[in-house]
Length: 149
Image 1 (cartoon, one colour):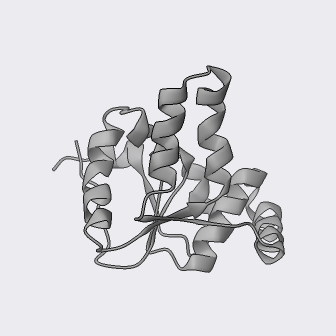
Image 2 (cartoon, one colour):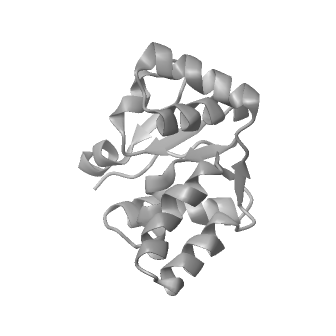
Image 3 (cartoon, rainbow, N blue to C red):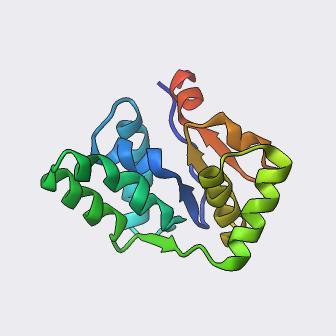
């Protein structure tokens, strides 16, 4: 299994699946993401995402009335090393432009626009569609997992 190549500094953007893999301990992704979390806790960089991840990650625990899982997500989403960014009117406009030019779905366009605005040095996802966004430093976890060390 390969290892996620982390930047020396700058914000790392994590979309919803990265939070889900970490909280629900889904392998091999949890193991791949662990060094990122440890370095973020040590202050090397911060993990950023759109506040949209609150909706995306809490649906399952709320539907299943799993308060333990809900609390685990809340603890990670609001951890010191995580910064969730609001979707401003300007971000929605940028997301609309990305949706128009790349064909991304609305939530993904909002994630991509947020990552670009914050100047993320790495965009961690498992969705190859983000590669269609020019200037977005995408790392696809499935591809990393297939790499040899």
